[in-house]
Image (cartoon, rainbow, N blue to C red; front, side, top):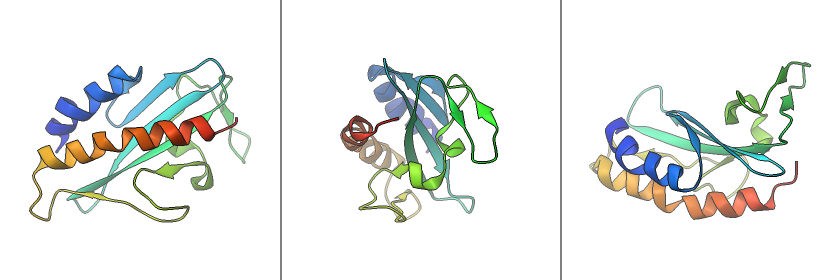
Length: 127
């Protein structure tokens, strides 16, 4: 699955202006930083794609730790500030499964197809 994500999903992110390597990516915008993290199921067979955004100055956690935008990941933000691609709403999951007879190529294509959803979500965020 990692090979297919590197072959399909990562180039799609690069075309959108993202930098980084699996599992963490960021894109600098004029007034925000868009974040994307791929998190694999610890038991194998699937992954989620979490997205978030923050101000260009970075982020301060609720316990007071400052994280500059250049090193921030989607997982640094509170779950209420993130969205999982394909999830119908808050507190719901959408796993991209590759352990149920679906080829990694098809699963990577499905993840790429969700990038329009990500763009819409990022464009609704205020930091």
